[in-house]
Length: 324
Picture 1: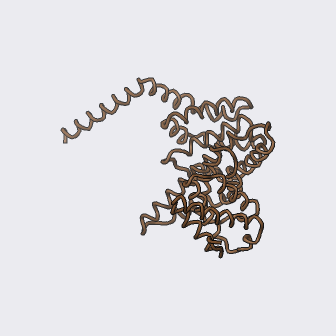
Picture 2: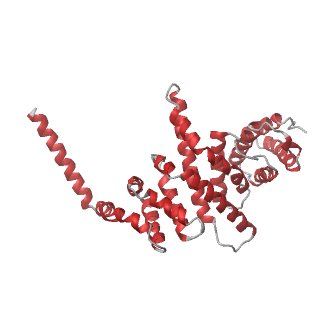
Picture 3: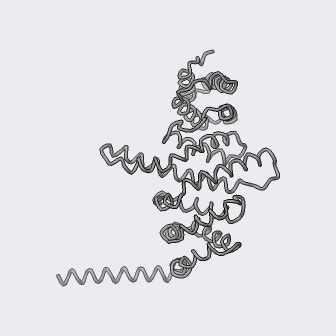
């Protein structure tokens, strides 16, 4: 018994020495300073009048972007409600510095694979994301049409990144539940229900696909793919003329087989989830059919079997031949 106690004391002492060693290092001292002195003051800093919040947020963005430990410290602190309060108070200026840094911070904090998103959900993350995303997406489209307007590129990428983080986390929960087979499905059902409002963004994501920005396209297409995997084509007016036109144009713009496969899988999920086939009779629907037919013939000569088969499956589902 005494021997066991001595071993326990020795382990405890070694642990304390290691802890002291960490705090003696520059990184350890910085983390200690941030944890003990800075973070307790941050709630009041974030709620100060402008421009204090923008500088406070800038520092947090930098710290959480380059340090996983700092990222965890911020997530586990009590400042999350203040961050969302800042966002709520600056929604009138989505392109302002405060909002841009707040959105970048959300992107950083939701990024780690082990991040618990429940505290974010309780603060209204999904509702905030849907509201701001819609506004920024409209501004981005206007910017594309009228160059010279204030750029919405940075906040849009932050929003897309946060959306991707949420959907990836949801996909992981669902996949683990399916792999468990006989496990409790409640967690997966709850997170799917919480995030279902994100399907409202389906049309906006589709309409971003033909943009000329590589980063926006890649993020939007990945988010759209995850949305389709999780919810299918569950969204309002998902096969409206504007969306059909965007899908047709994107299929023609993207020449890499990998991108075409991704787009075709998205289109297949959208179409198979839709009971109304009236879209086929529209001019935009016919354009998509013709693109699929041409793509199928072109793909054969390049021996991309997946592109051929998925394009053929889509054409079969909607009652068209890929040979015509």
